[in-house]
Length: 96
Image 1: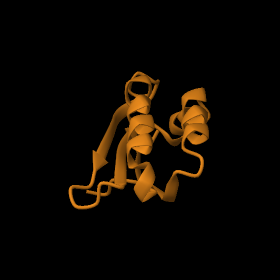
Image 2: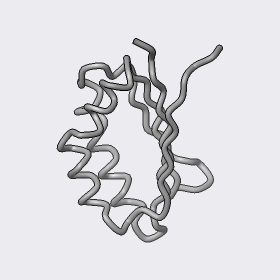
Image 3: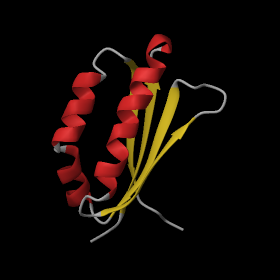
Image 4: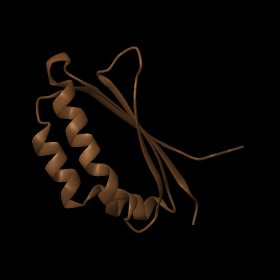
């Protein structure tokens, strides 16, 4: 199995930063104990507090996909509906 790196960028609406941050933080502990999770790290931009970035590593794409179907992610999506301005996700492979 090839390790998978995920880089996810979330930009909250300016008036919803605290809500999005709170909901993102709820994902940390529950995800870090999931099967296949190597690391699941959340960052917030020092210059633009509305910009958050997840840097994740998973043992395989299949285990990451299982993570993506979990209830806590569905709950996050419901809680932040309309509060996120932009979301991008990149599936990446380490080459060096």
